[in-house]
Image 1 (cartoon, helix red, strand yellow):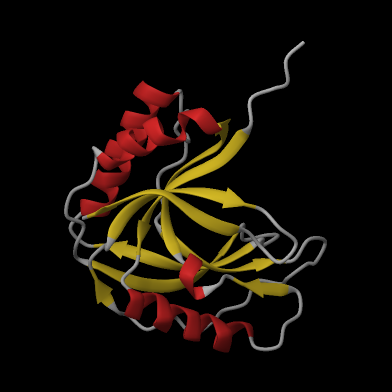
Image 2: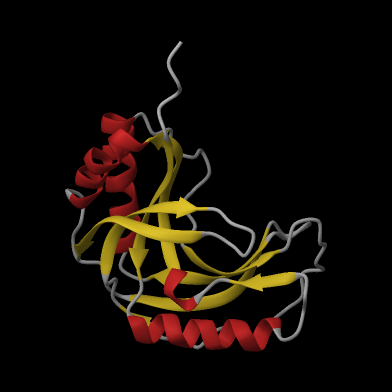
Amino acid sequence: MSAPAPQARLFAALDLPGEVGDALAAWARDAVGDREELRLVAPESLHVTLCFLGGRPEADAARIGELVAACTGPVGGLRLGEAVWFAPRRPRVLAAAVVDSDGSLAALQGRVSEALAAGAGFEPEARPYRPHVTAARVRGGARVRPEALEPPPPLAFDGAAVTLYRSHPGRGGARYEAVSRTPV
């Protein structure tokens, strides 16, 4: 019997311009403060997830990256919105909503989702797309009471690139490795 093919945990994302990531990281540091039950996402790891594919054969990663790259186009008119806790009753994530004023981000997400469904066996989520940037995660086993927070700075920005990432989970949080990156 042969060993199972090595798996890669993959997701497609819109990268933020550096100054937006820096401002969002500063907001998250202030919002989280010294709360030990929350772990900040590293500034270089901040992104807007388009589609989470989960475990896929490593051998498919390059082809999936090509599918994602073929969907890119300009994504503008974005801005950071309110602070959001996901899930509201028992939060696991503190995020900043992303306001998509002209619909270009939703259109990109739709193209990526359709391409991955057709070419990589991706099963799109049934719930509507809700763009956000995860700023902090609740540590395993901890409970957090969702509280109203000051919103992040309402920075306007355009997407920087569309990237297929491989996630390497670890004790201190996941580390993301770019498989492919295409400027938008």
